[in-house]
Amino acid sequence: MQPRISFIKFLSLIAVALFAFPQQSEAGRVVKTKGRKVFIKLDAAEAGDMAEGDYLYMTSKSGKKYGIVIIRKKKGRLVIAKLGKGNAKKGMYTQLRKSNKSRSKSRPMETASDVALTESVEKRSDTMIGLLGSFGTATQNVTGVADMSGSTTGFKGIFDYELFSDFGVRARLGLDMLSVEGSSDNGDFATSISYLTIDLLLRYYLYRDDSFGFFLNGGMGIYSPMSTDLGTNQALQEDSISTTSLLIFGGGVAIPFGGWQIFLGGDYLYFPPSEDVDTSVISGKLGLIFEI
Image (cartoon, rainbow, N blue to C red; front, side, top):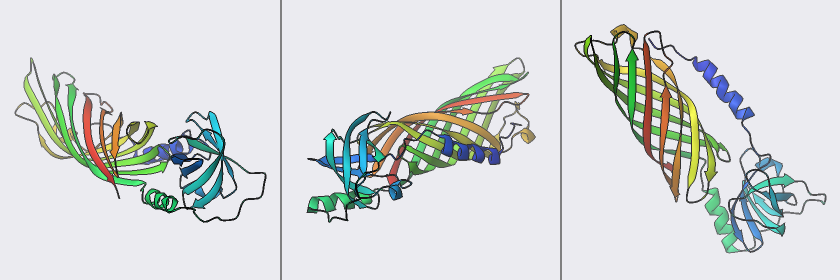
């Protein structure tokens, strides 16, 4: 039987990661520039800390400053600012610098294009759902019985929620099928197991723009067997196959278009070994998700 990872401990690790994960202080993202106007979308957590009249630094992801703007209009998470000095480009991050002057009074948006952009940005959702297919290789060593290898296939639904810029949580629910076989002096062996799976992952974009993104993910999977076929010669005992908790590490590339996103990636599934069984899986992923 595979040893289990405490689900409560895993949730605690996620909570620690949410607070300990490096986040850029007061960071928004430039979504468009138009002359000296700079349109910025804020994280939900930071939107309440900024107001008209505040100054924002234009920075790289590492925090290097390239320019400074002043907030002229704020509506929800969208900021319209005016470039003061330096440069502002789409994709840059922002860092708040409080103005020494009194904050300006609310100003109307000056043009129809400003209103249109505000509406389009506000429609962007932090929540995405979709479908995922997978295919991979698997190995399983049963001490004193046989070394086996084979494949895995899977089909899952995805729920992705962005907590901060580039950082979010991703849940996957579906089916994974493990099939391995091998031979030894003890005979021929084949094992097939169908699992109902729940994956809970943290997802972080190392790089992202309007046409490409590269992300890492990691977390925990809970695999509950739904059906098993151990063959005539059984490498595993029926009562040793039970719900298993495992660790997942992976990443991929995302290609957005409109409110949709195609992504390609891979995961390494680490099954904590028992005294007699050692299992590992490397799985490729192909998914399609869209905003809701």
